[in-house]
Image (cartoon, rainbow, N blue to C red; front, top):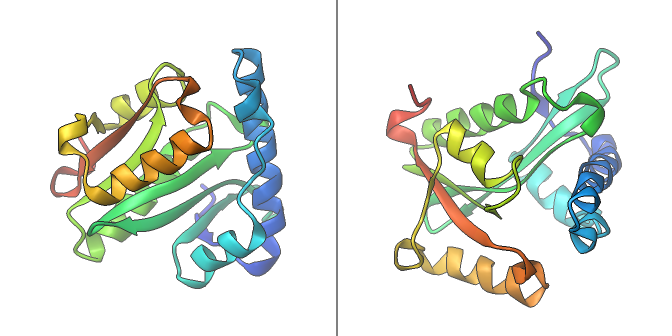
Length: 175
């Protein structure tokens, strides 16, 4: 099995390419704005990379085919983005990246891992729920998560139902 590794400077443009490719399936379900959204800027990816919270899953030639960037929001790990090249979908690469991030966060003493997601997209909310995340009610969202959701709404993402999700790391990986 290939090993997840920290992202390097040369991986950053490839991570953008992965993001562009991973967005394309959204067009097939009528979410063209999501499909056409720009990937995170190189400076943003670099911040995660330099902080040691950007990981890639490489192919046999060591070229990334999936990546995850992890923030810290209100004392919890927060998946800012996890994307896999659609040519490699169904190989559990996203789950491996999420498991890696959860192990890292647990080793740092963080109690949970959070994310925001589309609730009605099969490879989003329902997928994360199968991995052990649970939907948060609006009342249970932390102030940092509410800020993220407000920024997402301002960017037009609330055209489609979205929610925050959380997984407690004391019980990771879920049974």
